[in-house]
Image (tube, rainbow, N blue to C red; front, side, top):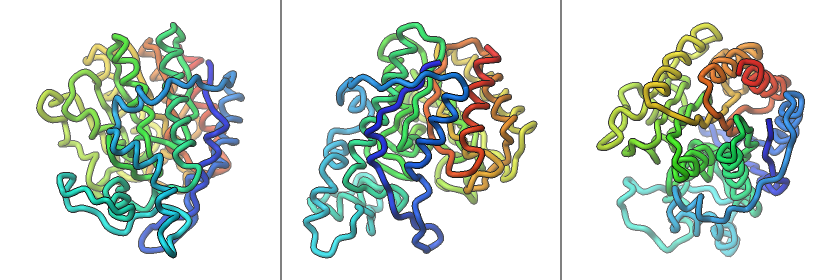
Amino acid sequence: MKAIFDDRQWKHQPRHFMANGAILPNPEQAERIDRLLAGAKAAGCTVQAPQDAGLGPIAALHSPEYLTFLEHIHTRWKRIDGAGAEVIPNIHPANRSDSYPKSAVGQAGFHQADTACPIAEGTWEAAYWSAQSAISGADLILAGERSAYALSRPPGHHAFGDLAGGFCFLNNSGIAAERLRAQGLRPAILDVDVHHGNGTQGIFYHRSDVLTVSIHADPERFYPFFWGHAHERGAADGLGYNLNLPLARGTADDDYLATLEIALRRIKSFGADAVVVALGLDAFVGDPFKGLAVSTSGFGRIGAAIAAMGLPCLFVQEGGYLCDELADNLTSVLGGYLGGG
């Protein structure tokens, strides 16, 4: 299996994160890259840099207004007297249809859902190349590879078409799926991150050409709170093309794998001919977010179950935060996939 990663993804170095009113160090640390690279190599992956496909595949999902914001907001932010080192919003519109301000502060509130997606000097460049890694992974699938792994960091599944959030800026998994769809495939996105992929759901919610399935900790008391509930099935043309499978906090391997079988049956019913796995490793029992309790060996079982579908598969990295087993968990899921196909 080939792994895709670009060194410019190191340039995003977020410092701050607010949780429960406390300002904390941001959990989405660049050190994740070293551990994930080690895990991919241990699974037998060969690492290569992505090609630059330009803004087109990114702009297929994200508005030009939003991309302009991401590219230039930090430069504008630095002109504000007394501004912090990172772009962090302190005010938000009540609705997406509210007026769009000229102010950098106001636009930050419009385009950043929460305080977990600070934008610093290298954020845009890192996010751009994170997306290009996913695009190049999709292109490998289109060229005939049965599988590939995109080390997309910063992650992407909380990013809507014009809204960052939850450590995410560009929706890498969605961009990859749209790349596959535009070339005639019928892709499904399977999100196994501990957090619901609310941005991915939002982007495709009214569409029937990409199936979105998410297994995650129940959002009634867990981020992202407002999305990811079982009754959210899609709308308009997309009704029935979104499946949320929320799990009780602390769900472990056997119950997780039983739920995964439900997800895989839905993907089969969709008639998918390719799968994009939004690969969060934060469902791990020892992950700092402590939402679910999947073991390292459980990740291997997840990979094997996905392989049993017999479909081309692109793994796109989402969450999975600093813990001693992070590399082993990636090795387990990729190894389980490679051994189960």
